[in-house]
Length: 328
View 1: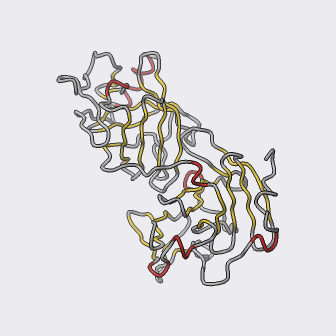
View 2: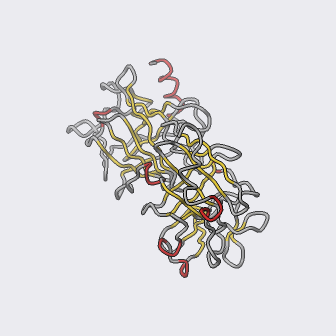
View 3: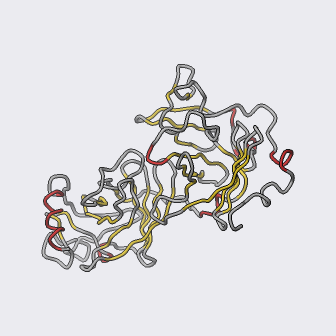
């Protein structure tokens, strides 16, 4: 353990600068007065001046940290877990543990398959770092991403917020049950299917499998969501499960579409439905009319002015309970 930490130290020396830490929602102690992290030779391991953090370096047991990409990370030391909310709304929980030296390790299942990250102090915060990890990407990968003290609370999230029936403007309907860990999908072309929901408890959250790996990203109020593909991939051009889904397809109750608009900021496209902001997946561009379209010219959001599709009219009043499949 010590030998590869020394090796990692040489790499970190090129990219990490150590500073004394303060905090907002979370704090990191810095040693001299009980608040300073030792530069070297303390009880903690040191990476060429980049301190590997342990529980004792945090002034509070539960702290929230803001990523420089807009994501948030909540560390819950007593319960050995964390919650990670990406800038675009994917939320997942994962484990914290301690190595043989007592240093804090965060388990996160990034795209490279590597999942053990040390928290390396830098300035007023830290960077999760893995020896063999990929560089932190624009779609919420952790390696090398800087986290500083958060200025506000992380929106509350529970997986049960997904439960229920959802529908987009195209009539594509979803039903989720996070106790069964099952999903139902049906469309206006009278097709229906059911399948498993997955959660590897690796910080990436619940996802749907199939032709696309899709993460339901729920709004803060729990009444709308978008499906975001894994790793920033573009959506399948033939997919009808795009745009914003509203609980029970009731956009009138949960949005103010008269004030809906798209915005571009820092290379990202956002859709505002008059109530909530949603990140638009990769593969869309803003046209001169201010609307986001994919390369086939299809809008990210559809038209809600028509009559809403009712799956019960096709599949019966108990269409959800009768079609979970699996062992449910």
